[in-house]
Image (tube, rainbow, N blue to C red; front, top):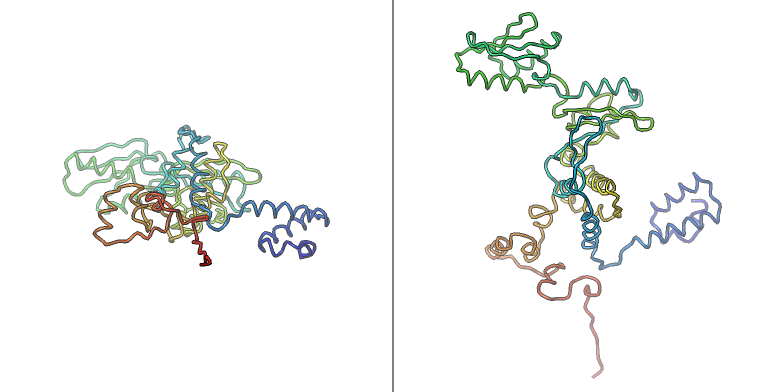
Length: 372
């Protein structure tokens, strides 16, 4: 490792950090004194970032995230270019991430294109194609013909007629179809009353004709050399399978969908990325290691778990720690029925009964041998 390996830091710094230093040395072509100075600074920061055995890192992380989060706003902002669609922002979004909600209030995707498709025309074309269009979006008028027990659709573009018929027949194979100029007429076999006919009409209008399910809007914007498509609504699996899409960069803000499609490690990275982004938008600077710890805790069991009574806090081994958090009587009664034992290995339960916590100097016992 040329000049870096000649210094005496290799036994103190991890190999990965030394590799990063080596990369910078090569890129910047640094001299011996500059390499020493850089390594000394990296070493200083590395040792500041380390924690001692017995440090209560969970509590430090909780304080470090919660204290700045009290400064966050409760407001939402508008997503540029989509005619006033509200996107969850600030504290509500942070709660959404750490509560691991099944679906965010405003699911969004950021879609990058492969190099050969990375231009304005392709981006606009793809943005139009992926927006979900239902029957209601492609017809001018809908009417009920009570004499024939039929539903008549006035189509905006006759070229879409075959797609509409195909989509409706998949859901209602029993309907008879007639085409008359710009109209498609769906006739029901049995005699229906007006309420049933109205229900069928409502269902037909919701049937998807084209586009990608769940994506309701798409906006194209330029970021440096890249043409990016931002969507309201998310369907990661379908979008990543498209030929034009760069699957190594495209992301969604839906944590559970990411876990399902890309795995738990990707979900962990998304928790960290989204939490940091939400706080940085508000001008809050939280050390990434605190957020990484939360990401690890939420995903280390192999799926995404919330921080709360039904997640991490509710799964603690200590009965008193669970009871102190929420639903006290439920936890105590359940523990007594199951004959559970609390071994006082954690911090909360020891504080509750006034014992020394098993952390810092409380981690070990001192044994003294006195002369008689």
